[in-house]
Structure formats: structure tokens, C-alpha cells
Image (cartoon, rainbow, N blue to C red; front, side):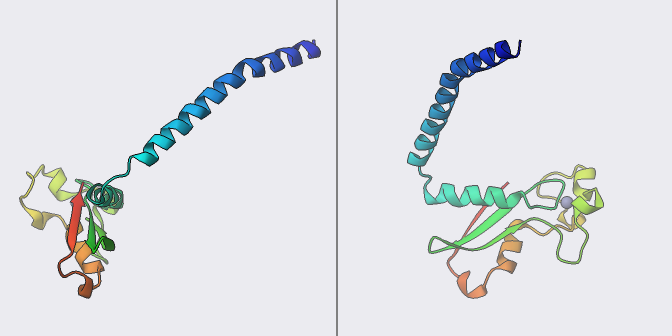
Length: 137
Ligand SMILES: [Zn+2]
């Protein structure tokens, strides 16, 4: 009985192995294809801004901003409460979201600072002149 199990296990591996090879090969092909598709700098910085937005502390919306000077990132920021204030995410509520305030109105109800503002605050002032801000949510 034990020998039969081993036999079937070995047989299964023989049949499965080509499948593994196919999966690995197709996965490697996809990676090669991805490496050939190189994003331009705007796409690159916008993707980074998207990742930065994942750190947002507002429950209503997540924004991320990246400040770039001479193709070098000099600062990043996401929307969230100023240091020392309670974040929407920690309080468990956002007044603008709870009251269903339309976009662009009643910003005084939310303590969160815009992603772009936080990026400017966090960056070195001497590197901000003529820089570009990439922003997205
Ligand atoms: Zn909020």
C-alpha cells in the first residue's frame, strides 16, 4: 500500500512538473515584457504619488503628492491632520464625509491638510523653486 502511494506521488510529480515549468516560464515572460515597458517620468512620478497616497490619514479620500526638481524627488506628502492633531482615521470619522459635503466645499470641517501642502512643508525650501508637484488620489 505504501509503495502504491509513492508510485502515485512520483507519477503525479511527473505530470505536474511540465505544468510548473509552463507557469514559471510564462511568469518569467511577463516579467521580461514588464521590464521592456519603461514608464516615462510623468508616469513614474504619478505612480509614486499613488503609493504615497496610501499613507493618507483621512477617511474621505486619499491623496498623495510628490515634488520633483530636475527629475529628482525632493519631497512627498499625503493628506492628513497636522502633527499633534487627531487624524480622521484615528478618530474613526471625517466630518466632511459624514455630512456628505460636495467636493471643493467646507474644507474648514476637516482637519486634514492637503497632500500638496504637506509635501511643501516637508521639503527643503531651497529646492522648491521651479519644482513640479505630481498629485493624485
Ligand atoms: Zn478627513
